[in-house]
Image (cartoon, rainbow, N blue to C red; front, top):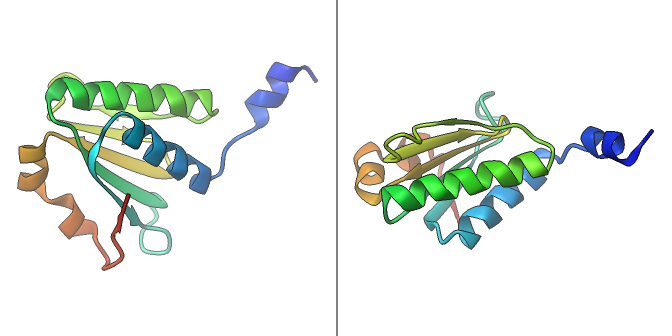
Length: 122
């Protein structure tokens, strides 16, 4: 087996993916980063992460860079909302990420809807 084939078979765990996403958002200056553990509460994902960017441009940039990092780690990710970048959803299977402009985040208030009293601020 060649090295590329070995790398392709190495898949990071859900916890490693979560750490990669949290680091990515922090490095790209995401604001008010909140992680909500979902394991055992719903089957859609193990974690939901919510963050803000100061502008549509920053929101889009954070999402694009995150997807590149996820793919480099051997995982897949789907992205919705890049056109307007008011609210971008990154579905990385085990981790769902919502990146908002601040006023859009306040309007939808996903943390309150999905919080189980265990919010973890980064």
